[in-house]
Amino acid sequence: MDALISYLVNVISLGGTYALLALGLAVVFSVLGLINFAHGELMTLTGYVLLAGILTGQQFWVAVLIAVLACGLAAVLMEFAAFRPVRNASGATLLMTSFAVSMLLQVLFQNGISARGQAIPVPPWLTTSISIGNSQISKVQVMSITIGILALIALKIFFDRSYWGWAIRAAADDFEVVGLMGIKASRLISFAFLLSGLLAGIAGVLWVVQRGSVDPLMGFKPVLAAFIVAVIGGLGSLTGAVAGGFILSAIEIALQTWLPAGVMPYRDAITYTVVVIILSFFPNGIFGKRDQEKV
Amino acid sequence: MSDTLLTTTGLAVSYGAVKAVRGSDLEVKEGEVVALLGPNGAGKSSTLRAIVGLIKYQGSVTFAGEDLTGAPTERIVSMGISMVPEGRRLFPQLTVRENLLLGAPRKAKIDALFDELLEKLPILRERLNQQAGTLSGGEQQQVALARALMSKPRLLLIDEPSLGLAPTIVDAVYQILADLRKTGLAMVIVEQEVMRVLKFADRAYAMTTGQIALQGRAEDLLASNEIKKVYLGGA
Ligand SMILES: Nc1ncnc2c1ncn2[C@@H]1O[C@H](COP(=O)(O)OP(=O)(O)OP(=O)(O)O)[C@@H](O)[C@H]1O
Ligand SMILES: [Mg+2]
Image (cartoon, rainbow over all chains, first blue to last red; front, side, top):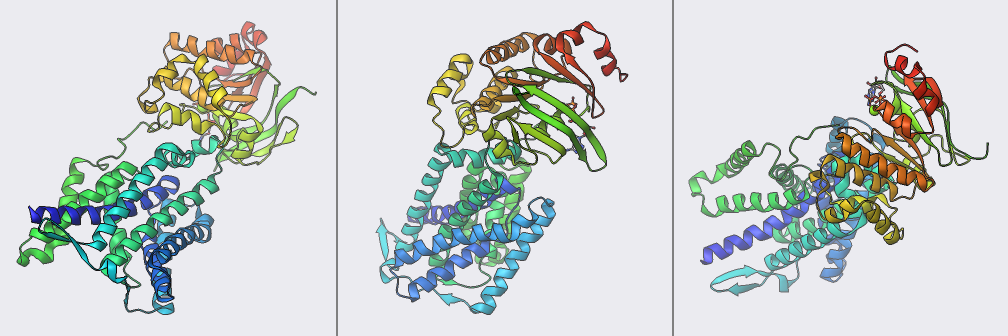
């Protein structure tokens, strides 16, 4: 029972972070048809801004807020500087651009800050635990779960109720026709990057607070996970991104918890095998579009 | 002429080496219904897509006295041109209500318009919360029309309203178009069902291989043999 509770807590906390990341990828994918691999570096940037905030004596929550907003702004600038000039180029060009931006940022972090990891001094009250039954749950995880779930609920309301939410969902279906509705394409794209950046920011805060440090290359692993999540859920599907986040997290944590020590080095290989098996049943992802007639 | 709404002058569209439209001059007057005819690949859709700024073109487009040449689509829509694209192209994952509301400018007061449209197209009221992709073809065409009307256009461009619809449904669609005409809305209708649209339109243009081969009053074209030649590749 206690093992189950702690398993679920871990799954929900990691899954929520994956879901936020994958949603950030999906939102940009909806408007540009691009998987933005520089999304991971946005998380890293969030980590550094958070660190700077804490080191300059800001209240923890103020530092978090600044870090998330800075990440949103950085995403908008990234689109403006890197993707807008190649907007009408092929998908391959866009993808290359995203790799280039990703590596450029990594080098900037390495040379401008430090190649080594920096510890994030989380406030002491966050390092304690609460107990449910006999299991201990760290407050970091409580925070992670709470923020993750609140963010997902807020997004659900945004996508269902707001004009820009409809516009982004519509763009996933048919970007050109969104233009016919009188919506300015470049504004919609900027908006999508802003949203994507804010999501990367929230996920970034949760990520660095959980691992306790930030380093220049740390964005790669989560963005790869988010990419897999998006593929499991169905590229471009928002529901799929959330479902995929929890599925991948459930697989990873299960293996991490119950895999015998001898097989542990194969953990990621086994994870991907399970993912491939899932995809063989759902070639377009679980919530992916079935191949529709193109008109 | 003061009552001219839309003019295109020397409108030309190419896709790489393919010249889809080779310099067409069209005119639509206030409240007029104009048919745009021609065989497959004649350049009808390209003409409409150029007018709303979805593709690059040469030549010029004037609307309501303003030069809209090369203007971005959002400006053209806000000036009062709206289009129902070929194949309708609803947002299939969105509900009917969301499709319609996206058609209106973001901050527009649309309650009255929304109610009026649902009054005209009562089927939609029952379907408001249904995903648009799950509607029948006829219902989708109605949503597509309603969505295009949400921006309160003065000119509606409709690409193949009868595409893939059963004859009785086509009747219903044309009945809706007839009601719209009474409100003074000008229309350009691209249509494969030549006889049907010629009976409905005031004037018509017929294109072949990117050029206007024939133009005139719809009833004159209906009476003459010329239009058949266009479709047989003659003219
Ligand atoms: N995106 C595109 N890329 C390349 N060629 C295109 C493209 N769109 C249209 N064409 C070509 O331009 C020409 C005109 O196409 P258009 O769609 O305007 O014709 P249409 O009159 O609407 O035909 P239909 O009745 O079949 O809808 C055709 O030869 C077509 O193959
Ligand atoms: Mg066409």
